Image (cartoon, rainbow, N blue to C red):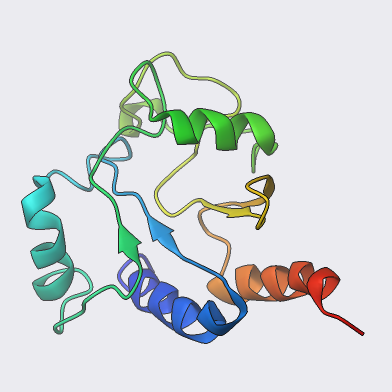
Length: 148
């Protein structure tokens, strides 16, 4: 499923860009050490390995960094403190590589957040939430900004 997700995020960006939605990607190696490459290797990994087939993201991909723990990026501290956790369970500790572990921590790769046009976090999705669900929630959220 994770192999398909970048392509689904490309489709989401393509479809929702006209209404102002911007997809941002933040690579991280804290979940099962699934992103071990250097920053310079991430795009090649996407293009030739996973998902492969010449894939190129059409969304902003940031440098790899921590999303949990002592060295987490400040944007994730802000997002996690603004939206409730997606589950009561954190996961298998032998696959999670950060300390200290906290209840609001991101559970796995591809957990998603929606931030409104005012910069306020609105929603958070479990990493297994289908992109179709994320899209439906975003479209529902955007209805409040449509003029009648």
